[in-house]
Amino acid sequence: MADGERVIDTRALDALDGELAAALEAGLDQAAELAVAVARKAAGGGALAATIHVVTPGPFQRTITTSDPGATFVENGRGPAVAHGKAMHFVVNGTDVFRRSVGPAPARHFMAAAGAELEAHAGELLEQVIRRAT
Image (cartoon, rainbow, N blue to C red):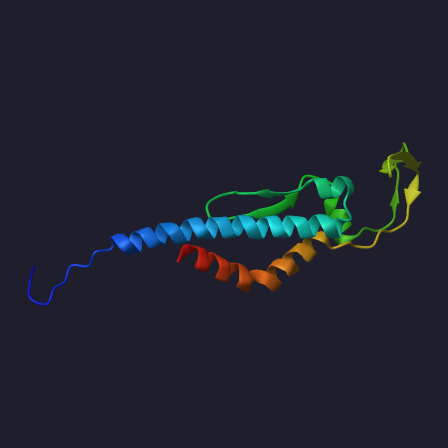
């Protein structure tokens, strides 16, 4: 070793890095579950709410999504619709309903509500992650 050189032991830093990564993953899981709960509540329960779930596409990534193909119309609203050929089929409170046309439906921003909730609490969630890791 040359004069003035120092050897730095990075084992403690490496261990802290691993702890931070684990805490961040746990924090992301917690934030995602919060977002799912808010989205389900804003969706009004029912079949749509039951399809809202978390997808983990990779490390440090969470996506809140729904498998309901009509969810976009609920989130953004839609104009009037007319059946082409047969009548449209809906299930309302467990009852089959058939209509040739329906009026416009206003937007119900259930996913936007989840995003707003996360944005409002992002700082708190990050503080919890850091506290868990240190």
